[in-house]
Length: 66
Length: 284
Image (cartoon, rainbow over all chains, first blue to last red; front, side, top):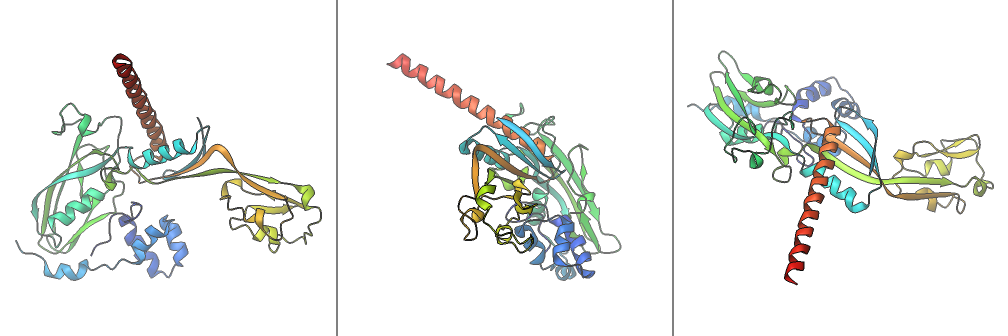
């Protein structure tokens, strides 16, 4: 759905790096360089961004009516 | 116990602790990881929520947001005079009121309003949820101090590790028959080390960065190494610690708090033992 707030394994904050990650990826920055700039040094935090599928935009079309 | 700081940034630091044994080093590591208090949202009251995410999911996301923690003006709610009811010494209110009027809108941590400016989210760019046009989000949340052993959201440190302090002795006399071809990049003694610690300098094998050595001992046991030329040993009672903060407080504060809590615990244990001995003395 949405990018998780913290890394599942170590608890490092990853949610604030998602927009920056997408931007750097769009510019074809090498993966090593992306994570260096985002200051994510362990692979547990890196996989949080790599493996994430952002589905919220699809769900957003079917908003709950109250 | 002597502490010497090696490197320090606002998020990470490494330091050497001298004069402790492995048990003490591990106790210090565990205390820094799980017993240094940090702020986190623990209760959320939803007044209105018509976003695509359920109340529970939003509450869970809010709980995980790291908050800057002020250990000087707040106490753990269990130790507070209000007995956990929630007062201004142990609890902070955080409010949020967002409405997507004309277009879809994202809710970020910058939309949260804390009643105490010292307690605020570590980053303003954490997305809490997305909202479609016409939906509303209105809630009131309460943050308090907690311990990492109760929930990972209260962890002040995201990484706390240690390793033995290495000591590399190079016997230049034993290297006399070793043929160094003047090429550091292809020399087997240099390339053998996975951490690039060794280097030739003016026909002498030297250590470039001792802190990088992970005591694997490949250089000691290597087929190309002349017998007794390189000896890698761990210095007894000396450890290098690595600490990373979640952002709630600077890493050196976590270290200081960790050592303080450790001393308190040891003191309390000593008192209990004394009490026990006195009791047994009276009975016997």
